[in-house]
Length: 367
Image 1 (spheres, one colour):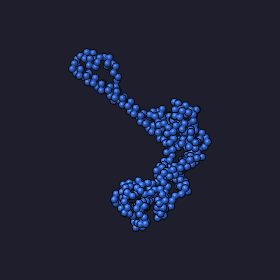
Image 2 (tube, rainbow, N blue to C red):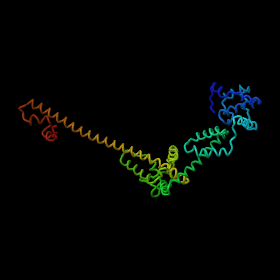
Image 3 (cartoon, rainbow, N blue to C red):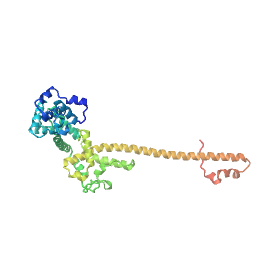
């Protein structure tokens, strides 16, 4: 129940109409106020309040004015006796509702497990769906705490059936390969030294390696991702393993698996453990493929950058040589013009740094 009500909203929602006033006419005092508040609350929420505090003070005061009973009397309304039971029964009948039964709750749990749990992960939204369905079927919904337990049962039943149906689609050979991902990690972490086939290079389990993100854009990272992808493909998971459920659900199970240690997985029942591992591998196959593409692109860009830098370096070196040679020629020309009758050794050699420098400078082809 919302707690903030503007005056115009109070008038629109909480005004007692003619039929409402007829129902409260034969009541008096706190009984009259309590019945009126329960009546209008049920009209708004299709359920009864859990306590006095659930109905906002502004609402109590507005309804109290209409039935001419002090608002303070609401605190004295009896929530445990036979009177409130009679009030609830009368109000349900007034709106064409009936009380829920154990059979109703069992049916609602089955409906949730079959229809909504495969596509909705939020327990709050599942609870809201229960209340909405009760309203559509003109059934008073269970109390909020009971709805929460009903949702919990539905989720548990769905997950048990979901796991069994996944395992039934997986061959015995694939089940064995999935088990090998976490086998032998006795210390409960991803660093445990397990049996053969359970540990990858560097002492890291295949499970830890599978969850790990790709490394830096170097050849070793690319090869590691290739090996990781090969290992996932060797599991031979059925292509339709999760075809009948939402991608959001598979991603949620993949996230759960990523947070588990091998030892925790080994303590689970086989259907749940295998489903978690299968969801992880199913999603990781796509993720690893994407990371391979990204790594390859980054490596190509890195190689191109290095090649460009090498070419730039060589070009700069050649340009420096050319600039140096032009400067030397200018100095030679100036020396020759200043003393046209002098010898090469006396006039030219000094301006170019000596005979050795002149001989050491490589020739540059004319172009």
